[in-house]
Length: 458
Image (cartoon, rainbow, N blue to C red; front, side, top):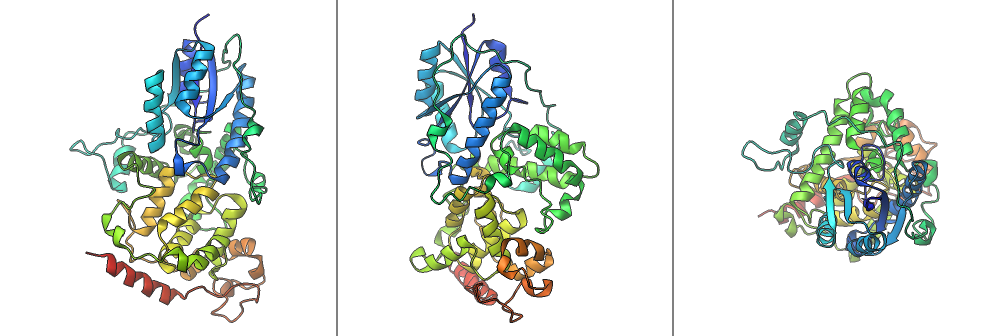
C-alpha cells in the first residue's frame, strides 16, 4: 500500500471543490486532520462565537468524511509539531492543504514546510492574492479598479464535486475528542440560541446558497433593509470554507435576474484578503499613518459608553437593535454593522480597534480580512476607506432604510411605538422608562468627532 497522505484542514471545512483533498486522494490513503492551534494567532485566536461554529462544523465534517469511508483526526497544539508527530506515527510523507492568507497562517505554513513536504493549493478565494495586477505589475490598493480587473478573469473554474469515496489508512491514528476541546463552553452561555439561526457545515452552507437564489436579484436593494434582512447569510459558511466562493459564484450566477451586486460582495472578500496579504498588521495598525495622531477617548473615561454600545443601550434604537442581534445570534445585518461601527468610532470617539475586537469575539463570521478592512473603511483609516468627516446619522439611516420592524424585533421595549416614533423616541417624547436616553446627541457627537479629526490632520 502507498504511504498515507495528510490532508490538513483549517478554514476550508468541506469535501466539494476541495483541491487539497483531490490531490491527496490521488496520491494514496488520506488522513484528514484538524489541528486546534490557539498559539499561532496569539491575540487573534478564535473568539467565542467562532469557536461555537467550529465545534459544529467539525462535527459535520467528520460525519461527511465517515460517509465517504474516512474520518477526521483531531489534534491540539502547535501545528507544525502536531503534523510532524502525526506523520511519524503514520509514515506519511506529504501534507496537502489550501493556502490561507492571515499572517499567522502564512507563518505556520513556513514552519510546516520546514518539517514536512507541504503542498499548498488555491481554493479559498476567487483568485489568490497577487493574481490581479495593475498595468505596471503592482497590486491594487483601491477596490473599484481591483474589482474591475478581477471581473475580467471571471467566472472562476467550475467547482469539482466531492469524491464518492476517500480511502484511508489500514490503521487510524489516535484522535482527540471534540467535546474535550470545550469549544461550546461559555460563562454566560451567550451562544445558547445560535442553533436557532445557524446550521454549520457544508450541507448547511449549500442549503443557505439554495435558499438565497430566489432573492439574489433583489439583493441590491434588499441588503440595505434590516427589516427584510435581504442578505445571503453566507458569510460564516464562506469564512469557514464550508462552501467555496467559486461554488457560490456559479450557483448565484444561475439565479433569475441580475445578481451582479452580490457577486461584487464576493469580490470585496477577495479585496479584503489582498489587503491583509499586502499589510499583515491591518487588524491592529492604521493603514493611514495620519490616524495614529487621532485623539481617541480613553476607555478609562469612555468605558461606560463602550459598555452601553456593547449591550445595546445607547439610546439609538437602530444601533441598539444591531448590537442585541449580534449578542443573540452571532451576526448582524450588513447595513446595521456600518451604522453601529460608525456610531462607536465617531459619535463615541472610541478607537475602531476596540469595536473590531468586540466583533472578533461575537461574530460567527469573524474573518481577520473582512473584519479589519471593514472597520478601517468605516473609520477612514483604511487604504480605501470612507472619509472620516462623512458621519452616518443613525436616526436618519434608521428611517431611510425602514428599520422599524427590525427595531421591534430586537428592542422589544419599543415594539409598541408607531413607525414615525420608533426611530427616535426621545424626539417624540415617547421614550419608555426602561429604555435609556441618548448617551450623546447626534449634533454633539458629530461636532466632537470633527474637532478630534482636525487635531490629527498634519
